[in-house]
Image (cartoon, rainbow, N blue to C red):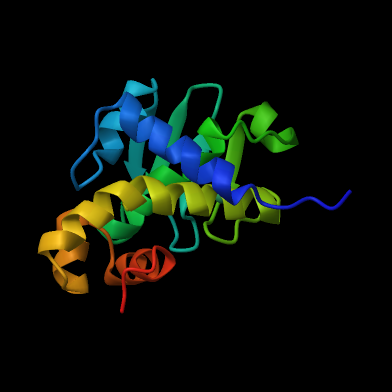
Length: 164
Ligand SMILES: [Zn+2]
């Protein structure tokens, strides 16, 4: 059986999490959601290639503080994706995972694709961007509103077919 990323399921899961935390407006409170799930966020200036670390035993997400805040937010949501999507593998069970999204070394490609999609949807979900786009049409202004990089916003607008 060929395995495929469960994109529809993943987006649905991200929207469920937003609902759980009552998020209906940008920007998604990434840190509050992580803390709400019982995660401890640890910020350290690791080498550039390290995106984020997920230490499951201590329920800790390590964030690379030398990265741009937009990238830090994406890294946290990516790790939350692995958590909410119940991704399992040996290192994860051992309690530590070196993650370097979007192309992590330790997680499988499919798991990272799913975590990436989860992160994108948690940061810029379809219902919220659709509403915001009614009044703000400028991608750069929207990126600021959602506290994401212009690239993430552009991809979301394109994905949700809001660009004419
Ligand atoms: Zn990952």
